[in-house]
Structures are given as structure tokens and as C-alpha cells.
Image (tube, rainbow, N blue to C red; front, side, top):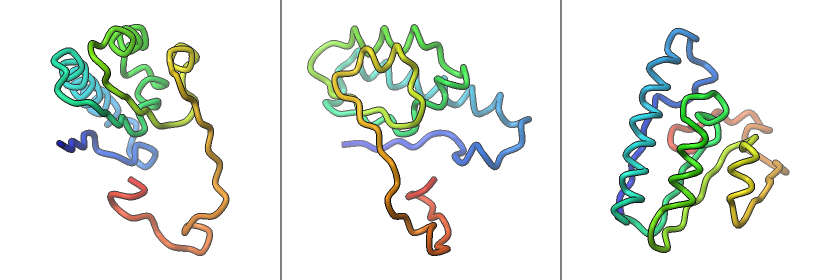
Amino acid sequence: MSWQAVGAGRTWVRQQSGREEQAATALTAWREVADRFATQRHQLYVLDEFTYPLAWGWLDLDEVVAALRDRPGTQHVIITGRNAPSALLELATTVTEMTKVKHPFDTGQKGQAGIEW
């Protein structure tokens, strides 16, 4: 098992000027994931909040869809985030929409590194 966290996180509180660096980091991370698909390095991938770099145009949607569609073996991929592009939804075998019922934010608890970002 391996764990890799990339990006600066919490893009909603960052200055617009840092977006180019974030986009470059997202692209580098995506290329690593695509390479791992091709070499069948892992059986399970969790691409947390992955829909955002797609929605913001930081990654080429057609390239991502092709890599997911054409990956060899029986790798499982879980992608989280809101507003997934329709091409990603069409490719998916399972799509879930979650809504908050209760959250620590509701009682004033602050976000925690590693949990909320």
C-alpha cells in the first residue's frame, strides 16, 4: 500500500496567482497516476477531490477518460468531488451523490488537517 498526497490543498482560500502552480502540480500528479495505471502498480486508487482539477481545466478530460477507460487489469478507481463532468459519469460503473445530514462544522468545530483538507 502507498499513500500520496499532492497539491497545496484548500484552493478556495488561496490567491488566484497561485493557480498556475496548483494546475502544474495536479498535472504532475495525474501523470503519475496514469503511469501507475499502465504498470498495474495498485489494485485500488482513491482520487480524492479529483473532479475539481477536471472542472477547472487543469487536466485534459479526454486524456483522463481515455486512461480510465483503457487501463489494463482489474484496477478499481474511486473518484470524489462535486460536479463531475458528464463524460466521467458516463464511464463510471457506480455514481453516488452525498448530502450532509450532520457535520462538526454545524457546532462550530474548525476543520482539521487531513480530514477537511
